[in-house]
Image (cartoon, rainbow over all chains, first blue to last red; front, side, top):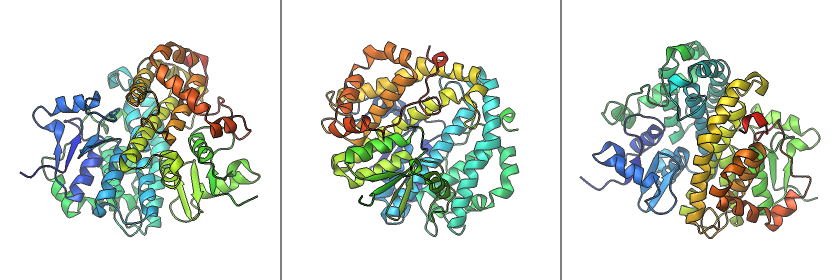
Length: 240
Length: 240
C-alpha cells in the first residue's frame, strides 16, 4: 500500500465534524489514513491533542497531518485541502473567500445543532439537560433552522440551482450535502415540514450524493452511520 | 477626505464581532468607513443583508466591502485582510493556517460566551431565559472558560510569551486581546480567579493594548464601549 498523503484524526465512532473533511478527501481522490480507526490510533490522536506533536497543538479534533503541517478546525482544514486540490474549488480569490464564508456559516449552524442536545454544557450528558434541550430545540426548529436553510436555499437559487458557488462545484457543496443528511436524520419531522421551502437544497443533496466518488464512498465501510453519540442526534422529543 | 479603502458593516452600537475586524483595520493603518455608524448607514447594511448587493449575500454582520468583493464571517474577513496587509501576518503558509486555526478557536469561545446569556434562543431576550443562562454560565465559568484559556496560555508559552504565533505579531493577537478584555468585562470574578493560571495572556493583552496604533484607536471615539446589548455582557448573576 502506498504511503497515505494525509492523516486524518477524528473520534473513531461518529461521523461528526470529521465527516466534512472525509467527504473532501474522498472527492479529491487522495489517499488518507483515518488514524483513530486504526489499531492504536486513539493513542496517537490523544498525544497530538496534548501538544506532543510539536508546533501548534489543536484545541479539538478533527485535525489533519500533511507532511510537517498539523492543522485543526474543520473549515481551516477544508481551506487547506482546497488550496491543494483544484477539483475542490474553482480558481480565483472571490471563489476562495465565498466558499469559506459559506463553510463558516454551515459551521455556525452545526454549532447550533449541537446546542439543541447540549444547551447547558458540552461535558454533561443529554439526560442531564433534557428540559433545556427541549426548549432550545423548539426555538431552533421554529426559528433558526428555517432562517439558515432559507438563506442557503436563496444562495443556491442565485447559482441557478446548480452549486452553492454557481455553475461550478466546490467542497462547500459536500458540506451542504452532509448538513442536509444530518438534519434529516436528527429532525425528520421538521425537515419534512420545511420541504416545500427547500426544494433546491434537496435536489442539490441528491445530485451530490450521486457523484461518482461520493456514491462509492457512501457505499463503503469508511462511511460511519449517525447515532445518538454524535453531532446529529435523533431524539423524537426534540423534533416536534 | 480620500475614498475609504474598505467599508465595514456592523451593528452601530456594540463592539461585538465587528470589533475583531476593526482592530485589524486599525493596526493595518488603512482607511475604512464604519458604514452603519454614518447617517443612513443602517439602511445600507440592511440592504446588503437582504442580498441587494448582488453576488453572495452575507448571513449576518460583520461584513466588509473591498472593491467589488463583499465578504462576511469575521474569521474570513480577517483572513482576507491578512492576505493584503503584511503587517497583520508573518509570511508563509504555516503561519497563515496557524493564525486562522487560532482565530476559529477564538470564534468558538466567542460563540460560547454568547450562549451564556442566550442559551435557549438568540431571538429571545435574556430576561426570558435567565434560569437556563445561570446554569449554562455556571458550566461555562467552571469548565469551558478554563479549558479554552488554558489552551491559549499554553499556545503562548510555546511562543516564548511573545505572540500567539511565536516571535512574530499577527492579527490573531489583536483578537486575543479583544477576547481577554471582553471576558474581563463580562466575568470579572471568574477572570480574577483564573488570574494566576493565565499570566501569559494577561501580559500579552497589556502588550497589545500598548501598541501605538491600537492605543491611539482605543483612546478614540471609534472604539465602542461594552454594554448589556452586546456579545460580552456583565450580569453579576452569571459571574459566580
